Length: 410
Image (cartoon, rainbow, N blue to C red; front, side):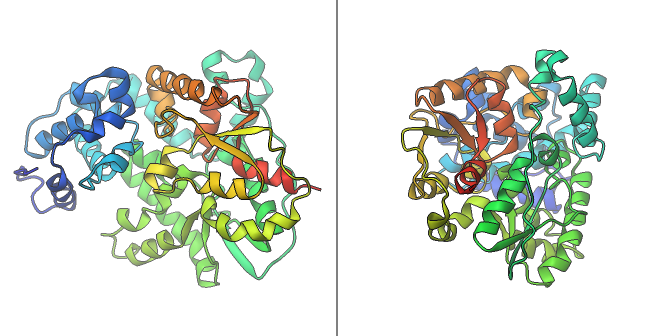
């Protein structure tokens, strides 16, 4: 797809990046078949191909409108279209640029601005933990919309105290420790059983995705730099990996090198951090033979685990099938939905707050397909997906590492 950039974009990093991405697009439309919002709305402008045309017009100097902004807002950034695209169009990076440009040209209504500010500042604030505890205390009194975002209080369990020669860093995250703390402690216990020590740098917080994808890209990159500073002494001391047990954080940290490539002070360090970053599931091939003889109880093969692979895992990080395969090797019966396993559940970071109508339609569609498996438990790999799916079902929804941790417990 050829484009003639407007003078304001020619030669700029955003303009050059957008032009390179657009050049790959051949307008074939394969992406529309796997776009969740196109599936629901049937509108070309609510699919990747239509959004690409809208962004192309903006880059060529056409003034965007409120409608342009809304069509870009409705995108989940699930990147399913990237898995489908035969030309390798880097849609995720293109839409980040497009939203930044459109938001600079189209003012948002005051109410929308306020909600977005609360999300990007509140979710990443030190006050989030106390606020979540208060919400859990009065959870039964909350209206359904708020109750859906406040999981029941969870016991974190013990953090292992043994030291090991092998050490990995883990990002605690901005919301996970307050919402579902057992995910982090379960991760540390499982790795401990495999002879690996989990280290958390207290100064590291949100991965930067919340602010970055809400168009506070300066705020997001500031958090990225802060995390790099917090991790760097541990990297220099020999930490062998930075392990992510939230796939949404993982896809962002793996892109630090791309996002900060023009930062002279951080480009090299960011590239190193991205290279060291691994989703927790990427450790499974080496962990399976070590953990197999340590299972305290063999998993009940009759109990089906319905696994929902998050978009950030299968499309963002391009990791597909690893969790199911390696948990099966440990004796678990893991199945993905027979239909639309590739589609987003509707969580998508803050999307379920900003676009609840579409988000809940996608959630119920996903739970319907998972329900056909008659699972004893639903598992996933991202805090947002887990919380969102749990709001629509009585079936327990957990992180897969918690199930492995349970099987190892004496």
